[in-house]
Length: 200
Image (cartoon, rainbow, N blue to C red; front, side, top):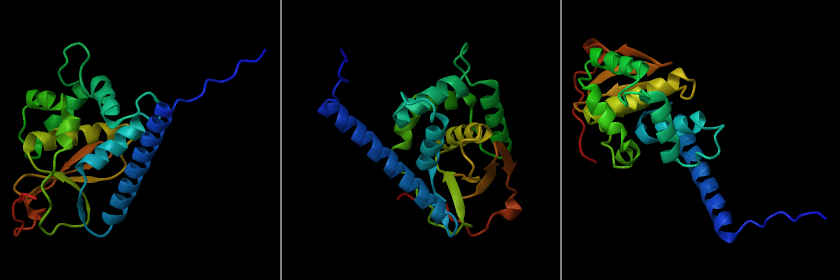
């Protein structure tokens, strides 16, 4: 006697449909970013991390939300399992960022990581000034440094192929994140007429 397969409940169907729509919307948003960065400067803080975390968790279907994917990435990659501080590789990223003028304490970054998805849900400052076309992250120092560290680790693991420019809260380009490496941007390469970030 064959057993009939269990019927998917309406709530499960709605949940699956909602997850599919979220993935499609995120894919469309990332496609839009990839198109826009060819012609203008784009502030892409949340979508870059969300897309990279989806790549990171592509073989883990149980990690079905951005929050779950990031939490897994944070606990397994960014933090040291024994001390719950930054892992050596993550601390090295912060050291490299500090050398480029992003002055942040690693302890501040660890604290920021606890609710980082919620922090990224808040509105970010716009990029009201003229910059070369490309993907940018920037704003408040601790948030910017934390995001830059995340993207560096994800780049190093092959989950983020875009080069990303880090801009500080005063509008100065500080460094380029590429292939998991940090390249400092000298003052000579920054436009002298760049005004500071302005509230949206």
